[in-house]
Structures are given as structure tokens and as C-alpha cells.
Length: 107
Image (cartoon, rainbow, N blue to C red):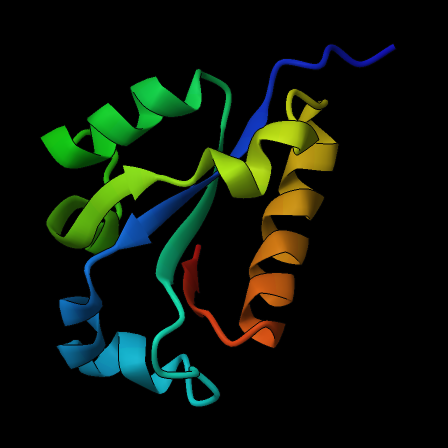
């Protein structure tokens, strides 16, 4: 039985991220007023991973520069899960948030 020790997480990004051409181009259906977010997965606690992003440790450039806070209201009920499920859920969650009009970055 796979161990449930992986997590998906969502970081709210400052809206200034929309001035980044690559980010904006990746989100043509963004609805003004909706959150801009980074979606990731980790083998550690999401709080620890957020701190790592902000400190530049294995950081996504948007999460490091524009990350404001974690959004546990979106992902808390999904965690923890096995590694393979987290890989799938990271992509699935990003797609679902885009469908809701969010601007999303996911690696």
C-alpha cells in the first residue's frame, strides 16, 4: 500500500504577476478579479514548502517573487496522498482552477 505522505498546495500570487508576459500568455481565459495562483506538490508540509519557495530553495520564480500566502481552503481536504496521486492531482487541480477563471501556474 503506497504511503500517503505527499501534498498538493496552492499559493496565492500578487496580481502583479500578470505583468509577466509568460504568465499572462499561459492564462488567456483569466477572469479579472479572480485569484492568481501557483499549484504545486511536495513530499513535505505545505507550510515548509511555501517557506522554501520564498527563501529561493528549489523555488518557482513566480512563487518566490509574487507568493503571498497558502490557500489551504482549496487543497486541505485533498491531503495527504500517495506520490502518484499527488502528481495527478497537481495537474487536475490546476486545470480545474483555470476552468473557474483563475490565473494559474503549475510546473
